[in-house]
Length: 254
Image (cartoon, rainbow, N blue to C red):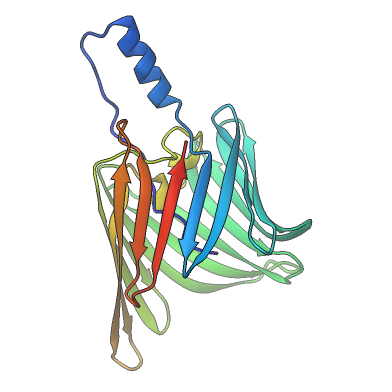
């Protein structure tokens, strides 16, 4: 699925004294929700419509040729399931599990598959989060390790992701702006720390370095994002440029 918007949350503004009109404007900004994303790539355009129940996500519906959509399920204020459909067919399910409000496990299941993938998270005392990803045989619950690694954070942003597997080590670093995330007011997304959309700010540069332990080669892939913003500090356009030169443009409507 296309890496849609590395879009993230904003710094809260604190006013020592505000008029009633100022309070109204602030509340309106705090309730801003992304309603539509328009993606343009290689002359093709797709739209994604977001719907909500209050500030909880309900669906993300695309006009692409597959008639794809995402449906979101909450337990209280925690996002616990995302289902991906193509037309009426359920293709993929992601389940999230929490302990005391912290994400501790995530499982990804392709419909009809005999296996699923599970990622377990450990919250460390130094503020990092370690993870191990497994392949799980659904019938027997037998597991094998796919990779493991660690997430590093600063200012409520994930700034580095280290991932180690049998044959390679992948390190991804992120640089951010200081603006508002279109999803900043969505309930539950801030718990999904292994996703840059849950970070505080918007990714402007992503650098992925893969070291192949068997052959000793190193590959670097850089993606940059250039934003424009509205008067409230929310991104309204994004131009994403990949290492290959491929460019994808996004328009964001609230």
